[in-house]
Image (tube, rainbow, N blue to C red):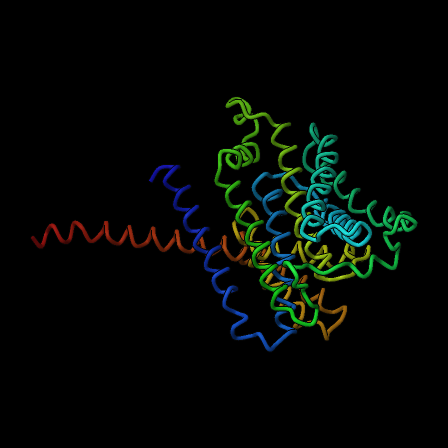
Length: 342
């Protein structure tokens, strides 16, 4: 099988996994509609899982180690929350505006990263992560809410119907649709000529340049696209939660999303999304252990990296390929025996 054949097979397999996950999520409320606690966790899984998938696109496929995703998420959340609260703009337009603002910040952060690589990009983007919280606090007179946070953010609405925070089913399906669209865009980019350019620059930068791939243009595209998609999820989260604060930039959430990438599998679609459900449900299960849960998470990461360095979906791909090779070798061995019998 040629390279293009393998790419098409991988594309088909990952699409099947992606659609199967959303098909299951589509019908879950039929069985869980009375359990608001579980529905709330599932909404959170979709939000952070989608964000982790965009981060996986940046680090796993484009090979750019950036830590600015939470900065983009929070910038978009505050933008959407403030314009809808103070200017009376539709929350749906606020979410779009939040994504565009995050994209602008992403491009501005991407410009000084054009000629940098590896740890230097990580340091600059992590600086964004560190500087956003103080800026929110300083901008309290502008209506950010400072350390307390931005409160009373308007809910989403559809015509005359306004989403209620006591009925989570409409929020669930809104999260389902928005996260599906975000992940579908990520999927289409990964398996497009643009995605091949990202992967080419990641695996062999010099060879990619000989093919005419402009490294600087592609880097800016990665920053802009990933920031916009992350911002869409950030804007939605602001309206779902109704209150946001600089605590979104805390180390605990940062580590949880990192775990989603590791457990799901970097460079595997939709591994990070699957990792989001595993990690967040595990986090809820271990919540009574308070601070000790991160010790357990640390042990889980060590075991996972040792046993499944490619993540869950990556390990499944490897297992499937090995089984396929064994079946082929057995069939090849059986052919001479059949010939002798004849």
